[in-house]
Image (cartoon, rainbow, N blue to C red; front, side, top):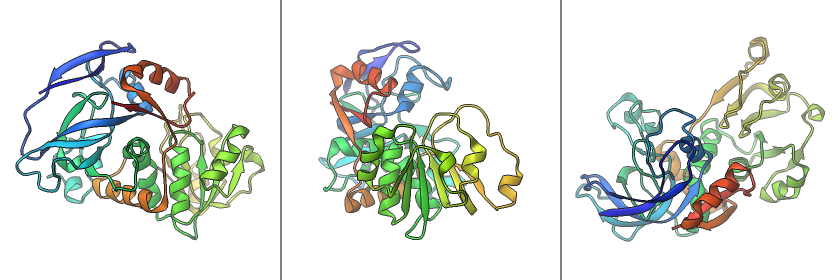
Length: 330
């Protein structure tokens, strides 16, 4: 099958129309006709080869929603016509210790959806059906696309570290990830404090479910939060932030801030605090995340663009002009 989309042909280049012949379906594969695909900052990193893993030309895109057109002979959990989503990961080895524990996102041989292969800025895609997730009826396709990567990225650590009704959670950065983190933390019953350097975002953050909105961290009470999730890409005063954590508190990075952490270990040891990182989520967690989003009315705030305007959309994402996620309509 010939698949048409938009590909980048050189480092940092614009995307141009591009077609390729898809591979034959494997026994576990599905062919998905794509209706929507979110634009994630990871797509821009791949376009610019920031991580030195890009092979050109390739079609970016890994926040995919579409309908199953064909299924492999052993892909028994999906049916033709079913609406599904695909995120950053579209394959793993299924036999290592991580896959056997149901933590496929830690597999050393995991397959990203648009690294070494063509992704979702296209009419269709072939992926391992075990990484195609049924979309609950309550969720609208365009708003769901960013959940497949961004939503899973913030939901997974909130779930792993057992955020609940007794938790006090801080969300640093109210953007593409942060606006979903607020909603999921609130859905779990937590008291949520939104931290942002942009006072203009206060009303929206409160509307998303935040209980407090803070622009000046130095005025925030120390040892008052159980869990902090940082979605920011800015370098911050890490000592100040660590001191916001209660004893046994957890600081979780999902945004890649520049530079190194610059604080003494005593700030962790004396209060038994932890610093962790988190990336996407395993298959079970993504299914659970979609269910929670449907039940608790968690929605990505999006701006929608036709596929042919992909370069305009990418430019707006680069300039942080989108509130909060850009989604391509195929």
